[in-house]
Length: 378
Image 1 (cartoon, rainbow, N blue to C red):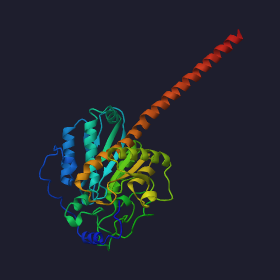
Image 2: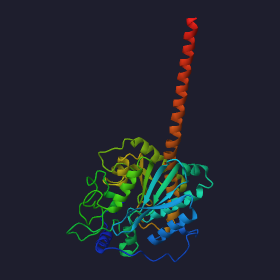
Image 3: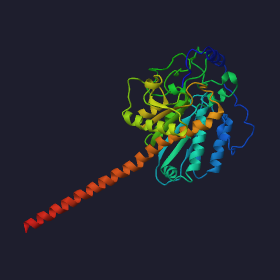
Image 4: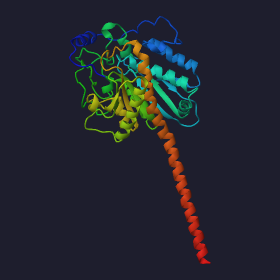
C-alpha cells in the first residue's frame, strides 16, 4: 500500500530518512519468552522474529523446517518456514510472504499468527490436518529484511517502505520498491523512475536481490504452487491480478468468486468490510508486483491482502488491533487455501472417478452389443 500524497509531515519524514545506509536491529523486546500468551498481540523486531522462527522449528521438528533462499542487499538471509507433514509423494504448495514493504508491521505479525494457528489446529482440526498432509506451506515472515530492520531504528525511519539498496549513479537516495521490481509488465504503470520516490521500480526488472530470490523460488516451484498470497497493509482489500488496466487474468471470474468468499469469511469474524477487485478497479494501477508475476508464470490463485485499517492509523496500526486483524485475515486466507486444496485434490479425484465410470459404462455397452450380435448370428 502506498502512502497517500499531500501529507506535508510525511513528505518531510521521507526526506529525513533518504540518506544513510544500513541499520542495526533494534533492541530486544525485554527478553520475554515467546510462550507468553500475548506474544502474538505485539509487534516484533527482526531479531525476535528470527528467534521465534528457530523456536517454531525446535518445538515442531516433524512439521517445521527452514530454508534460506536468498540474501538482501545488505547480505542478510531471506528465510522461510516450510510447514507440512512428511510424505513420500510430491506435495502441492501454498506460498505466503509478508513484509515486502518495511513499514507494514501488521504483515509480519500476521505471518507469525498464521504459523501459530496452523501448528495448533492441525492437531485437532481434521481439515487442517488433511491439508497439512497434502500441502506444504512456505511462509516468509519478513521478505524486505533490510528495510524492516531500518524501520525499527527510530521514529524518523518508522515509515520507511523500500529496500535499502543505493540508488543509481548520481542519486543520493536509497531503496527500491520491491513490489514494483518483478518481471511482470515492469515499469509500465503505477511506478516512478525517480529513485527518491516511494514507487521507484529499480534500474531494471529484478535489479533487487530480494525480488530475484522470490522469482527463483517461484520458478522452481510454480508447477506445485496452488496459491500465492502476499500480505500488506493498509486499506482492507483483497487484490486480484493484474495491476495493469489493460490486462485481465484468464481466470478472473474464479479469482473474484474465491476472493468474495474470503471477504465474507473475514466479515463473519469481527464485522469488518473488505473489498475485492483488481488493482486499477479498487486501488490504483501498478506494474511489476510479485502477485502479477506469480499469475503470469501459471500459479492459478494469486492474491494481495491489504489488512487493516482504512486510514485512521494507516501503517501505524495500534497493537490492540493486531489480534482481531489476524483473526479475520486468517479466516480469509483459510477460505482461499481450502478452496485451492479441495479443487486440486477433490476435483481431480472426481474427474478420475467420473472417467473410470464412463469407461466402465462404455465397456459394458460394448459387451452387451457384442452379445446381441452373437445371439443374432445363431
